[in-house]
Image (cartoon, rainbow, N blue to C red):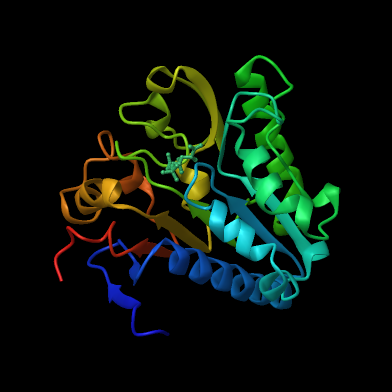
Length: 258
Ligand code: 6PG
């Protein structure tokens, strides 16, 4: 592990923190993690089921995964790809999380189209989209007794403390049984489809990717302030039996105590 990367065990249920020198190292460590978790899952269970995050932060990691160094290390026909959340826009829309991942990764790797389980945004209304995605997820886990437990889940962190499309004070924050729901997010002026905390917390390895000085204060709040998930929904993410990992750069970590 390069000297530039510091590792800290966080108190309580916050998991582990990897502090990287910069965004490029966050992306490289993320690509390494993906490769390692894929190898473990495929060896143990024959498949690797991964949940991609949206937003801008993970794009570079996806690009690295599609590059020769990392692409060749993954058995892509045994990988199933899902999204933790999606904007309710067409799949080719500039704001689509599917489109970002397809541009950066999926169209550049030998993954069978049948392994790509995107949110069916062509279905309306949004609630029907969410139900259809939940059904598709459950169908993918029939061999595991129908209990959807993803091997690796990537999440981002918004400056207001949201993660996936779980936004502050949303009624979705209190959901305890549904796996996927739709929410009209006023501050984003759009409908979103999102996995809920119960599903995200079943992940074997749940990883937040946080980069940039603009995330320093919210990261400090999420990790250091008292538990207040209505205001900081990212605090809802506490894997029941899995591990929680924060891969951040120095700028995002700049307000954390040593
Ligand atoms: C989305 C994401 C969202 C994102 C955060 C951070 O659909 O936008 O899933 O939760 O991860 O808003 O976004 P950035 O990486 O762009 O800062």
